[in-house]
Image (cartoon, rainbow, N blue to C red):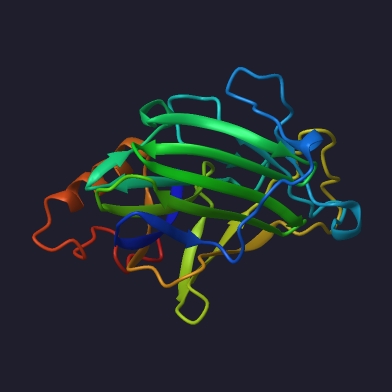
Length: 250
């Protein structure tokens, strides 16, 4: 299993908001508001609108916010999955089971979902996932410290692909993005592609953030090994001494 990491470091913040998004989302129409928890009967697969989609290159994602043993994940059939992990006051929160308050879906549309949760006491997170087109999906989060004590928060966005074809090539410092490639199979969930067809199999990945990360890299391994990387940084003499910093080409 191969993953690429774009780690975002957030300074300690006192009562107030820390935004990793361009806009704050509000659902104004009452009939659109829901309170869907992990056991609620809600469809959580999201794809782009027809006018922004293409046939064989289309990427849809299933949101898994109900599996307590993993973080909130967005999983694709061919393009892997992506998620983010929190480290608050140097404590790693690797799964939904360890959240202070579990995720609740506040609104859900064919191409977008709005949700809230608290990974740590008084750390309120509003999260939006949008599949804008067949090749572009976006996660935005807004964090609010509702307590009186300051918090030190780190967010680790991760792109993961289980077939070992993910190859990290470069980091684009101007756009805060890791550049990678992966291979796709002719096998599809609904209907397989013709082997003699000229369908693209070598795909380019751009995995980026809204602001400059303090660390980024790639690695080959499972989630338990990645968790150990995060714990190792806890013991570093300086917090910026990250185990994955500048690690590419894996």
